Image (cartoon, rainbow, N blue to C red; front, side, top):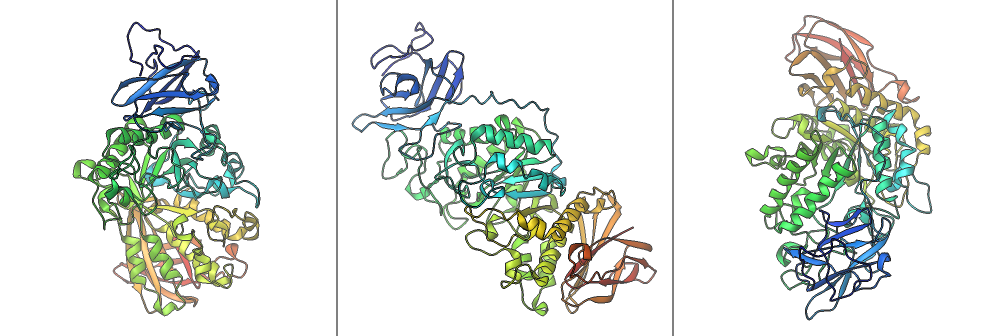
Length: 619
């Protein structure tokens, strides 16, 4: 073992061998840190008796470049002549145990994630030329999110998956519809080139062979920002792997209690439903996770995070297992670190328990997330897919429309499809509605009614890739998005674009949709008509009235209450022939509300609504 002495030369000479004096790493940080003339290497291996770094720079001689024990199990050293792009591994010795060689847990890029063959690559995180000013993020309440999977979003059948570069070629199709944020499924390194991303192998490495590595991601983020799209990344820390984990028994040590070694919990808390769980109680593992989170904002300029399955971070089995208080405090610390490193970033949780405490302030015992995914989807999919109109429950739909976290609609992300609902051979909403023909009149009408409800409901709306043009295939990492449907179902796509623009008030006539308030004041289970108003509590004058028909019958004379008298004009009608040549085009163009009280409102008018349709009226 080499011991650091202050009078040693600051850099190691290439070709050093075991037993020669060596120097502690001169640059701060974990992993490989390039500097002019060499690279500092620093790694955590608390059970090691000696550590070396072996790579292209020393002809892969295992004992040529020894590291120095700094303390707290951290080893470091400078290697002159090492340069960006070279491969390396750590060689770790432990008394009485076989030597192990490992990739660097702090690698920004690896050759591949194979446990035996994949190597770390020296990478300079500051070399990418952004050539852009800081991105002006939309306010959280103004987000309209498009969820995408990098490997299938812009890909052709056969061959390799889509890449960051290929995804850029399709970004205009998203921004032109009016979306102002994309949420990307995990892009950290995973086994094989095809994956949904929820099997992360290297936590700080960006998928290289499949997607294009760290510079590819930076180019994607820059292209998104150029189009006014914020970028939200999905991160996975409820488990890692389960396969090809170089962090497994990283320094050669494990025990019956800690089968995964230094990065993982003991046996009682190790196994999540999907793979081994990192040890949130260990200070170095916590810091490793926090370093990954701040890496995204500092190096990749991303705008926010979606944390996968937070219920399995603070509990071993989504609330039915052992509580993990250190997992909860990790979430608190991560959200605080993000807000400090990148003020204005979005922090979003996905939680199987719909735990409102996640979006409560840390000072009140909450986890400090800005928002979380909501159960809106399960309710809407369940009601829209019922084969009998009579069995549709408007009470359930009303509850989905009005439910909040902590009384705040801005804390919920709402959707009718996400990767969760449509993965693993689970059907798209259109296929749920009409399994025989997902493009039928019925499937289009009811799914488009669902979209209209989604974009007029309070909360932050999100769709999953392809939903805007009736993608009918379940999500699979092996099945590219069928972009030919964008032309075939251009009318459906136009409707989604119109809804996004209305939700963002890009026409200047629908500010109430961006508001924080809703009043569902007509629920007629017999006729299947629901009416609600949308407004901002601070500017109640900007009210809009949405009237929805959840039956297959056209309704020609539905009495609807209005808050004010005078002419109310239809700003949106999902039964318009613009959205389907076989639609009826039914629906009032405008109505005049008179002093006839109805449904708790001082004024009313009769309104026409097409089958399975929503109309939106404003003054």
